[in-house]
Structures are given as structure tokens and as C-alpha cells.
Image (cartoon, rainbow, N blue to C red; front, side, top):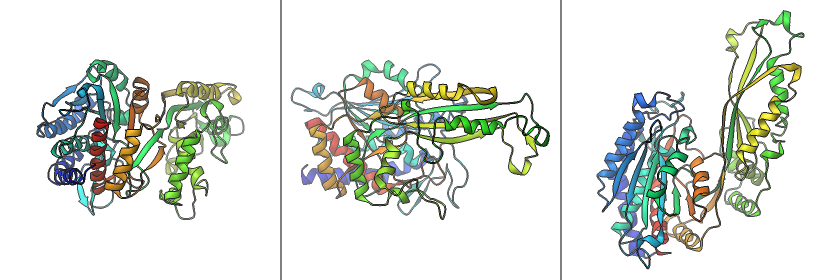
Length: 480
């Protein structure tokens, strides 16, 4: 990594971000491109198409030599934007083919706006303030396609190399990427031999260094309904005779979760944590003691589930958890009369260890919730979803060396890894399809970037550094 190359890459990226990326990314924020789970009529509303057209026009204007750009849309499925950039001349000893394809991934669909944005901010109103770009989809992760394209531009401007690169931007990630298996199958021949995957839909615990996501939890979702009556009854007349549907719900959940500790007791949802991931988690904890305990806006007097940073990190990355994320059948308190309700429904979200089998986990959950139900109440399961997690392969020497160099020259701090508590289904799919590929799962999200909630924001300087790091790592891949 020569000094002149470093300077040229940096200057190119800073210029592109200031003059080209930020204006277009701000325009993307204005497009309410809700993911299909939040906009069932997405094909008619046209916002996903508008987001793709917006980014496509910007990339078209980059005029990358030999690049082709196309929208791929299978019947009845959300579209993907595909940018195919040929390898730079001289890549590899025998030509570009020996380095395979680099697949750079991001998504353009967004979470719903959610109320409660701060004064002067809004989901579809891009605002730059104190080095931050506010707006839905700015950090999660509308910037990804811009960063990937800019990294490729910077390599070429500095006389560097990169293998054939394909930027794939989907529009269903926030809905669990249901269409991606079909697209991976459809694009198998076009993608060729994928040797390196760069995912920019992640982040880390601070904005001081490069963070690698080395594992992703899987997930299972279930809508659980307990029905005890054909119609609701006066609570004074029926209580004590008819069991409460909510009490039965609590009993069923106790079969799965220890309500005092949060521990998931089903064996099918637990795995042995690999030693190398424990070591990585300890190194992350050592970087900023207490950071994980203060990363979230706990109410005054509340505390995290443990005072041990290592255990909190492992809880969030390698241990299963249950969150109740929704409910129906409950009136608002102000409208609640003395009624024994006929049924209660809870939406359950399970996060699974990266190596747990989600199909086996779902089957175990179904059995626990439907077997020997108290009082013979009727249990209904709906909204069943599942996705496997992902555990990164052992880091290749060329990638390890490149990470050390960008840590020194770009960030000035050692890189660290983190197991992400959320899911990126695409990584699990790619891990299965390309078992020999190396993975760089990173991004500009920080612990307070507010993805999925009000006041989402992108740390612009950190996003630029991530772009710069990706450029150098792509160069190292081509040379390694």
C-alpha cells in the first residue's frame, strides 16, 4: 500500500462523497421505498422502482469503463439492480479470470418511517447536521451502492487493481430477502465463481475503527394465538371459570424461556459457542469496557441483563433470545372494559445462534407451543418465518494482511470483530452457495445510528473511511 496510492484513493473518495454521493444519497432518502412487508402494494406504488431508477441513473453517470448496469426482475418478485464492472487490466498472473468475481451487496428497500422523529427531522427529509445525514435508509443501507461504486472508481483513479466486480442491490432485505434464493439461482451463470463477498449492511460498536461482522444470528418468527371463547364475556361473570387466554400464553412461553433470566431452554435453539468467537468477543469488550452496557437508552434506574461485557456480547451474538414484538386482541387501556377476552395473540421473534438450524428450531418451538395446551385451549400459529444464521470462514492471509494495513493507514486503530445480533439472510445464502469465498461484512452503522427507529443517521466521515478501506481491500484481493 504505497503512500501515493493511499493519498490518491483518499482524495478521490473525499471528492466523490462531497460532490456526487451526498447529493444523490440525499435524494434517495426522499423516496419512501418501503420494503414489501410494509407495503404489500409495492408494485403499484412504484417506490422500489423509483429507488432503483434513482441509483441506476447515478451509477450510469459514473461511466466506469466497460461496466454494464441492468435491472433484473423475475415475475412476481422485487427487482434487483446489478452493476457488472470488468476487472482492471493485468489483474492476476493469468488474467482476470483467476481472481473470480467480487460480489458487493447492499439493499435499497427501507423500514417504515415510525413516529417520534426529533424536531426538524423526518424519515423522508434528508438533513445534514454535525457530520450526519439524517433520514430513513441513509445508513441502513442506502449508502452501500454508492460506497461500492466509489471504491471501484478510487482504485482505478489510483492505478490500482480489482477483480471483476458485481454490485448487487436488492429491494427485499428488510422483509427477510424472500426473493434472493430465486435470484441467486437465476444469476448463477452470470455471477460465475464468486471468490470474495463484500457486504456493506453492517457496522460496529464505535466510529473509530473498522468493524467486521464475523457471525450473524438466524431467526424464527411466530404469531401465537390462544383462543378460549367463541365470544368475549363479562370478566365478573366468567373469570375463575374460564381461563385467561393471556395466562395460557404465559404458560406456553415458560416452556421455552426462563422468564427470570431470559435463557432459552429448548436444546434445539442452543449451540456450543466456538472458542475463536469467544476470544474475539473478549477483544471487543476490552476495546471499550462498559460500552455494550451503555449502548442503548435504558430508562433511569434500569440496567442491562448482566454486568459482564463478555456475557452481554455473547448473549447478543451466539445465544438464542425471545422478543415479543407485537400483540393483538388487547384494547387500549382507556377503552378496556371489564371483559374476559376471547383470545390473545403475540408476535414472537426468536434470534438463533449463527450455526443453529432454523428449521429444527421452528419445529421445536411449534411442538412446545401446541402440545398439551392447558385447559384444552385452541392454539393457532401463523406468520411462520425462519432464516439460518451465518458464521464467517477462517480469514485468508491476504485478507488478514489487508485488514491490518487499512487499520493503520485509514483508521489509525486496530480493526475488531463483532457477532451481529440481527440477521442478513443473504449472507447465509451466499455462505452455502460459495463455501470457498472470503467474506467482508462491514459497514458504517454504529450503536446509535438508529436503524429501524426514529432519527436514523449516517456518520458521513466514517462512511468515507469504510469506502476507502473497501477500495484498498479490493486491491489486495486482486493482488493476492
